[in-house]
Figure 1 (cartoon, rainbow over the protein chains, first blue to last red):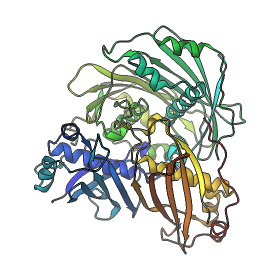
Figure 2: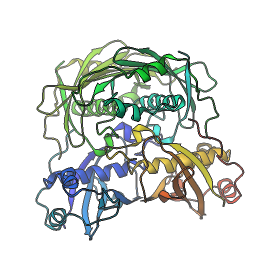
Figure 3: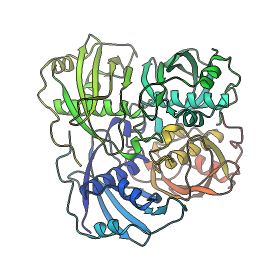
Figure 4: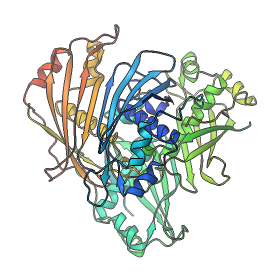
Length: 146
Length: 146
Length: 146
Length: 146
């Protein structure tokens, strides 16, 4: 699958007293890119979860920090759905400053489909599996807002 | 009503690149004190909301910043229920460093009872009104955890 | 002064167990709009603070909540510099869903110039005062990223 | 090294619209335990960093989510310094509900000493290495505040 790109502007609140983005916030940036990705697919994640009586919580999150981001930096999250298995989806993320090759942070997140009634893991809905296996039809290439 | 005190230790994530607590986090500190207050009363806020078919969202929040708090500071939130009206509850907050008279931040929050079905404001449940008008029976006076 | 508009997409992390945006996050939305506003002016706030040996912390923040915002909502923050006094700047904010007239939240923030050495309030730098008194030259009108 | 335990009460703001703690907040809980651990040792991390002209940023963070935590839950973070190498420190974390054996989340964080001038990795200061290799002298066993 090709990559999806999502811009993120570092806000003051994202920083900590070390004058860099707090390490936990990169996970928010990962998630924000994932949300933009699903909007770009025109998939209503919530509706799909409701229809199939499931939810798809994260079971694993990982990030390596290579460099720092600072207030007002314009970042770009590159995201890829690297694996869709029977019950799990795996996303890979790389964060750079826009226009810069060097990596600030990279990591992955794994989510699993869970039946709401039984609380047990279950199948990823076919509609989701199909869409995630297709080439990207939407891409977040517009200029970021200021 | 007498005051309720709740200790809060400033974490690294609460700070921003100015090396002080981010202004938005004082509202979290207000809320954390309010939550401790309700636990001290033995009132299950959620259960009360469910029983009466309401929720009690905030309609107003205000904070004045007099000084700064920094990483590792041990703060104390003084909280008071200053007014219980027909449909609203008003909380006042003062934040100081423990053992220090000078004020770091102070403000208030107003919450209103809302009927879940109609979406309109409604009566504060009597059980809540009664408990809030009594002198404090619990108080968060224990040593804060490290 | 005319209004400045800044779009904000509600992320999952902005919500709370009430399924709406947590009340403290509206202050982050206010700040994000303010940051976009200064970028639109081409003013480097940090550089100005360094040049004049000051910082301009918030001394007051206020928000009224009229309605709720939810996951994936596209909000628009309308911001106005309503007053530039000798030592203070006051910003007014109104948050709506894009394309919807009804107000979700509105409030204000007051910031004061503080001399870094003395810790006392001081003059807003003339360069900042001048630019804030001019009509807006930049405006954040582009489409929000997805 | 023996384990260090730190209690954390789940606040409303920690939750998301799924009515559970947002996955990114477990990294904050990890960090809060780590901060309490260093306070228990009587080590001023900031002072050590200043004395040696270094900082010790995180280079890796990982979490597996086994179950969910909800508003008002009283959690306990078990933390262990699992490895102190030449330039890195590794912390392991397990989060449970207090009084419950089952694991909600577990993970690790790796931090590396970095020379502030050169930006290159450098030795963990001996004073830190020595203290981290000793048995725990302090432990956060007190009752959590309400």
